Image 1: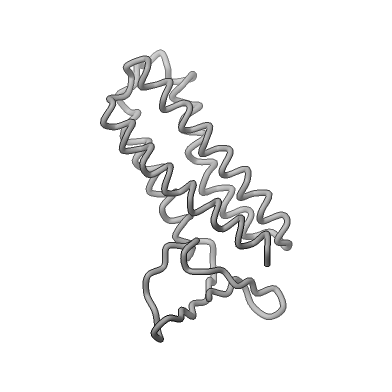
Image 2: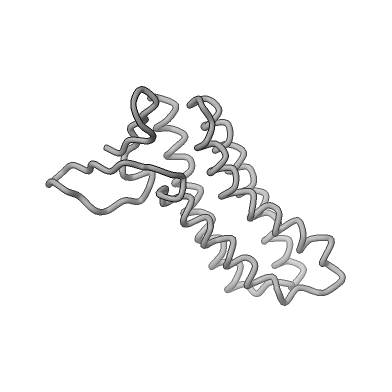
Length: 150
């Protein structure tokens, strides 16, 4: 089990939501999450942002304030909302920000598909990015589910 925060504000979060594979004792995990930076879902979504920026650099210049800007905003919003939700004082607020993050992820997937259909993005790049999106999506949904029953 993983605890978020300290004292009465601690939240137990299972390892599967965070992608943690290390254990201190067989069958158990004890790890304190001290910051949103410790969340694997945040780390992976940050990697997604960097990869998105690398892939869209080749987009047409005339899309700088259009699709390119929309993609950047959606991608950045994913880890930003995970972090902001983590910093809130209630589990309900945290879940709400995770849901916003998930919405931004779906928005990003849609924009990536539009980019592919317009031939701005190669099929292989779109598949690579969508694979990471699906992975992050599963982690966010799992974390939402775990926090919602806590």
